[in-house]
Amino acid sequence: MPTVRTRFAPSPTGYLHIGGARTALFNHLFARHHRGAFVLRIEDTDRERSTQQSIDAILDAMTWLGLDWDEGPFFQSQAAAAHREHVDRLLSGGRAYRCTCPAEELDAKRAAARAAGRTPVYDRTCRDRRDDPGGRPYTVRFKAPLDGATVVSDIVKGDVQFPNQELDDLILLRSDGSPTYNLSAVIDDALMRITHIIRGEDHLSNTPKQIQLYRALGFDVPAFAHIPLILGSDRTRLSKRHGATSVTAYRDMGYLADGLVNYLARLGWSHGDQEIFTRDELIEKFSLASVGTAAGVYNPEKAEWVNACHLKTLEPAQLADRMRPFVVARGWQLPERDSDLAALAGLLRERASTLVEMVEGAHFLLAPDIEVDPDAAQKHLRPAIFEPLRRLRHSLAALSSWDDESLHHAFDATTAAFEIKLGKIAQPVRVAVTGRTASPGIFEVLELLGRERSLERLDSALAWIERRATDGTET
RNA sequence: GGUCCCAUCGUCUAGCCUGGCCUAGGACGUCGGCCUCUCACGUCGAAAACAGGGGUUCGAAUCCCCUUGGGACCA
Image (tube, rainbow, N blue to C red; front, side, top):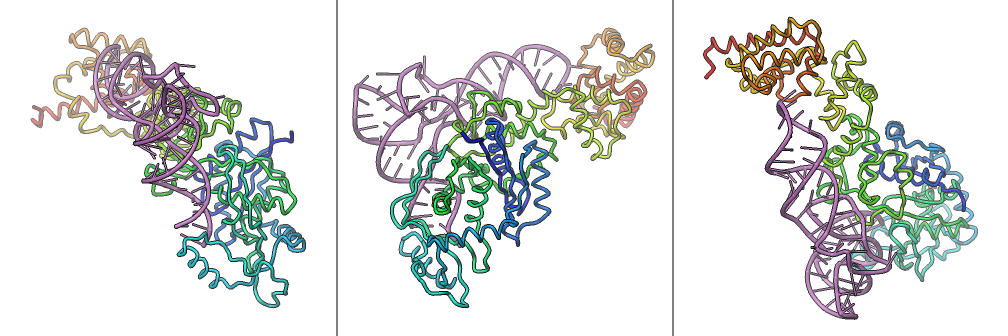
């Protein structure tokens, strides 16, 4: 059996979106699983809409996702001359012909066919013409079989039959001599010896025509696998209306590449009840046979959950590395000691789904100033807690060392003296030192924050309570 | 409009090919309990689906047909 070769062939007319990424992923996974090659080809034949910016964005997104390719990127536009040579071959072999029908005429016929309830295929006026078009502009059309049927043996869809009568004599070369998509794709895939074409279901209708082309050109027909589309929550094709659809948007939102890849893999593919996969597991277990047939809806909540699972598998130090760019982006100071950020990451990964959320949770340590949430202060910084808090502040100040054990002692002394539960004092302290009602464990927070900053913030809170009492705003 | 694809909890899916093990399983989300210094994690539990109708069969989520609904392509 020949080595498996797959390809991803995006057109550079925008960023890499979720759907394209999943197509690329399946191609990548399939190739890796079979120890084959994964080829990247940029289909930039539409010179009007193709941009270098898009090419860069796509390569960047692929790289971030870890979808490394073995060959390419190849650029389809550079093969235009070669594509034309194959058309000449078809022309001289009588498998293609020149069509001089004016575009307006074609449009009118198409409209008429539709109105009459027929498939709007070209009426083949020029199919058997022998005369030279002379100076008139012409397109080159494929001489498609007129009867019978073309069967697409699709790995995920099964055998799909298309009556040849319904298939058009498709245009190979436009009147300006430029090759069309179907022609270029077929020739490139054949020349790059692609064995498995894994692409979106939206290409299924094109496939019988392409198969006919492969045959006419004398190429082996590759295996096809048309994967179902990814839909938005309203079951229409995923688009900008549905929110973030670009891969890089997910990077910016603090997703891990492994998390997004895992989610994408499970959208349309499954392996029993397993939800969480490492890269290696994905490669080991991926199979086109387990790809579903129905289109799937992108579910952001589940994507977040999967990402959270991957967050938890990373070591604190690795997490710290990934957090750094986000900390910097926020304009916050990195802690002096790397170990502090790692320790913080270890605490935060239990309570966040994305790196952005983690950084948000790190505000009490990394933000230049904390802002105390007014509601939280109102609720937890009450006069009744003033004395216990003051007592605790002094115990903390007197501590000979600032570690978990000592902190516990200070708290125990205070709760014992006032006969209150830990929760009574922990929450006010949390609000005082983090400004919020939710944070990692209070001892860990204080330890990381250090004595100086902890005491400063406790003092501010105490002062706030005093002010509140004298203002008479307290009930 | 024509051709083609698709149809299990709100969502992703297992089961379908090779009918009985399905009282339809798992996961996200939702709701509730437990744990608990808060949040979260964890844990226990709940609500939640075979699109509809015919047929085949002793027996259908599973096979066949029709209908309905959704989607893709053709511009």
